[in-house]
Image (tube, rainbow, N blue to C red; front, side):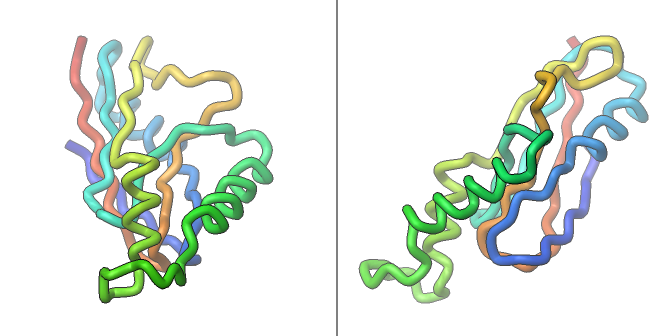
Length: 132
């Protein structure tokens, strides 16, 4: 297992970790299989989306923050981060990516992101390569 450390700088942001995942897969020496990318935090997640145009991730951040309001008076969780827990549940804690020829298989415009919903923080991302 490989552990990445990702530092976030804002309450809600998406950090592109595609390069770090590619490097870890390459260093593993695995030719074919899968890599599971897992975030062991309840107010962050992992997602795959476009990495060519940064406005896509800004749009996702803006829209999810409007849909899931940080200051909703119905929240009962006392820590003030209920919105982060909800967003994390919607995005999910992991992604599985095929490895072929020693590289993660991603679409032309796809990137792998740590989705931060309660930052800034330092987050762990765990990678498990499984031969196949």
